[in-house]
Length: 142
Image (cartoon, rainbow, N blue to C red):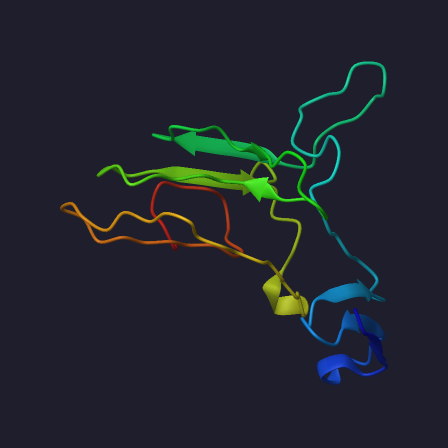
């Protein structure tokens, strides 16, 4: 990893450290930031005796496998697994409809996404949606 630093990242006036090969942001000096590498307890509701609370809530609709951390994966990975069934499937990580972040105030969102299976047959058009949205509803990309 070649770590670089930019003192005016994308004209923001903020200092940012990033991987020059992957362009992944490693650290950004902003007044507010949130990041999750999906290590440890991050998807568990509570860890007994440790007074921990997960930042994420989940929605699972018509999934054959539940949302969870991928075991023994270096650097942390969360699995939101859909399958090739011909039905509407929803796998969502959310903050309980708390709209704490605003794209109108310079919000930067980064994610690495990999698809291993998407339905290729059936009666419906396949939609894969990720990113930032308002309160969760059942209509993709709204």
